[in-house]
Amino acid sequence: MPLSYPLAAKQMGNHFAMTDVSSDLVFRRGKEVGKAVYQNRPLSQAGLSERLFALLFSGLVYPQIWEDPEVDMEAMQLGQGHRLVTIASGGCNILAYLTRSPERVDAVDLNAAHIALNRMKLEAVRHLPSQGDLFRFFGAADTNHNSQAYDRFIAPHLDPVSRHYWERRSWRGRRRITVFDRNFYQTGLLGLFIAMGHRIAKFFGVDPAGLMASKSLADQRRFFTGELAPVLDKKLLRWATSRKASLFGLGIPPAQYDSLITSGDGSMASVLKARLEKLACDFPLKNNYFAWQAFARRYPNPGEAALPAYLEEANYKAIRNNVDRVGIHHANLIEFLAGKDASTVDRFVLLDAQDWMTNDQLNALWSEITRTASVGARVIFRTAAEPSLLPGRVSISLLDQWTYEDEASRDCSARDRSAIYGGFHLYVKRAA
Image 1 (tube, helix red, strand yellow):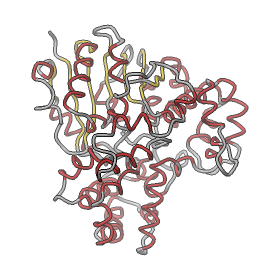
Image 2 (cartoon, rainbow, N blue to C red):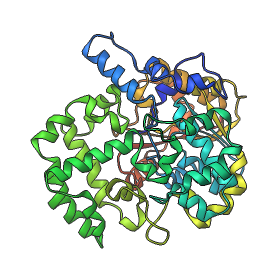
Image 3 (cartoon, rainbow, N blue to C red):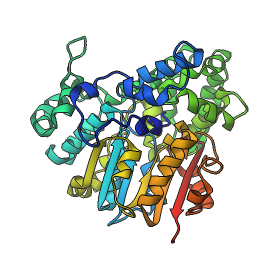
């Protein structure tokens, strides 16, 4: 359950090119993320924690995105003609946005694995023969011929850097693309973290997949209260989650951990329990594919429950028709915006990334957002804690050009099916 790949790691490193990158950059383990993360001396406790986090973030982190695109699109009022800039992450959001036929979607990320995943997804939409093939590749578990479909339909159209990423062999001799022959969503840093959570629960005699037998919200709450909550209250879990490194698999770096802990009673265990309760109890399982991934470790089958928008058959035609409107950029977001003309972006999606940023970085980002935003432009983002982090940190002269939509923000936060954020925030650009 990530709090998304952080923007500070997407902001730093002004030597990055704006588009493609060489293969040696793709596989340089942790070095560039480290430039964004490191704030303390290498041999200090905090410095060692930062370096461990950067190392873990050198590969695939999020096989799927954990922000709810349906809430995003409603908050943005996304529609035809809109020009959108977003952080890429796992890419499910990008393809979902295409169902609204925006004019342009520019997706930016510094994680090379995420870039390779997004580019592969676009070519899969373009070249897999049918919607059923697309679902089998990205939605079904244990489809042992997906790597063959990659070789035949996707690889010939993929850029060399991304192709090298997916065809590189592990120490076992397996090509990386073969993870799609098993269960891609059980891989990556997040997938491994969720797997560990399941093992811990089973050690205490609870199988989290038992939630999936629930027939109603009342059943879901009974299972959470009677089975999961007692595990989360174990002293061992409370001790473990008090260590910042324990949550690196959620995409929570040391700096964001301190923000997240303010949402509870002072213990990380209480925060995680509240977020997991919302995920398990607040939305019917038939409507929440995030809960399926967290508890069942898979997506539902077609007709079994709701799927991510890009895997729903009803959206296939629109997504395929609009896929050429997407640009994937291995880039620094601030520099990417600096290269755009004034008033040329209508929608901005920042995920939870600002939680990483210093005041100087926030002001640099919002200076470019404000310059490139059209009148009425909308910015959405999430935070680990509940309040917006901008007041008192971003200059008044910048924030005065924006209106914070408090009621809409609270409503979107309540309806976000991923359930793991403290706050959802919407800002709208004022007329001059």
